[in-house]
Figure 1 (cartoon, rainbow, N blue to C red):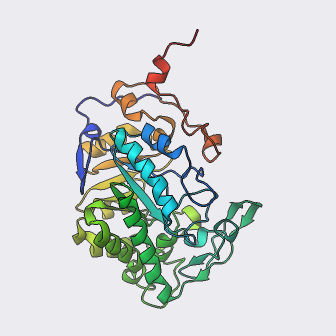
Figure 2 (figure 1 turned 30 degrees about the vertical axis):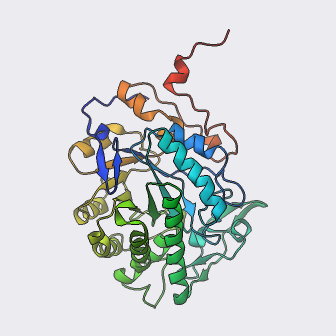
Figure 3 (figure 1 turned 60 degrees about the horizontal axis):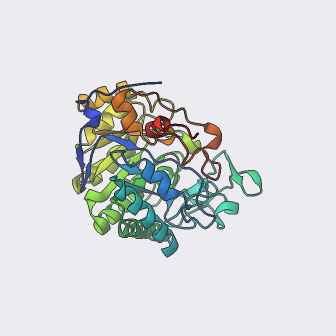
Length: 368
């Protein structure tokens, strides 16, 4: 596949994203790679992997847990809740900055998607509603258990975990953080009128179901500055066994509550032809980052049109960056794009991680 962006393409123009100046509007989407160490510390290859992709307008890191209990959906995913985690993330941030890039850390709590054999603790959720899915645990594939419903007094400590992880991220040198409230994880579970069956202040009405995500955003913004905070949502997304009858009301309540914060951006995972997208776009006056999903994230013609028309501020691209560390250079000249190797997405080691060739690699003469 090839696609060339002209020199005056909207996607190649700089954009101010809160406190960060992005050199272009093609962001690297968060990509779980399952290559962290068993304790959640990023791997020794992480700095190289991210630095290779520093030409992205902003790199959004793989989802990173805010606590041990917030991890455990997949093996070997990273965290940012210990000094060791922070020290290794500082190496990543330094490598990206040395390569001229900018980077936000995506923060998550996986909620009911955790399996105790991976996390080491019981799984929790807004309500005792299990996801009809299985997890790949160290001892094989097993069904996800029924999670324990969180008590009302347990929610403030979760907000604090997000705040503390954001503080660590910025102290490690990250340019900002993205709060993950999408794809079937804890904050999305609270937003859903199917998985959230609570009768307290965090359940029932759209405003109540949006409360936890709003409180997390507000706490993180107060800690590191709203201009360093992004939020990811995915209205109507069924990832993680999710379902939502009302795919608009809770997001309207959430965005109405946080809109005055002047955040860095809103990252929306959605098909732009979906009716929910028009509603969200009308509600959000700040920078909107669009992610169209794994199957179309390399359809740059559509993304360029949306950016040119001012519908979106930037686009988040996943697999395109995974397989093409120099994606921006390739788009500038219309070079052939590497195809991602699905078999190596979550495999350990450098293969399919740091060994995808760049145009510069291809121009190197073969050794005698």
